[in-house]
Length: 119
Image (cartoon, rainbow, N blue to C red; front, side, top):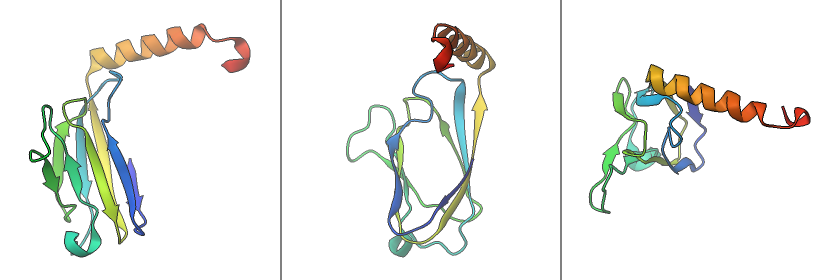
């Protein structure tokens, strides 16, 4: 996924990448922001590790050529705080094959149970 936050306070609310066991196990983010200054431009990635308290978060600046890896499941809820300049990132997910196969089986089973007009 290539993400371009246009600035003007755009953000991404707190979430997890894989809340429903869809196969994604590791999130990798690569940042493309030259000369980024988080004080002026915002766009900080905040991770709330499992068992977090308000004082236990990881704040990652989206600096050029930075590569970040973290678990995609509920262990790492995260958010992108408001960005005031255009912010670029490339996100890739590494999949667990067995979990992904099971997710596809669930999807097919659910799809088959829908009425024909909903498919």
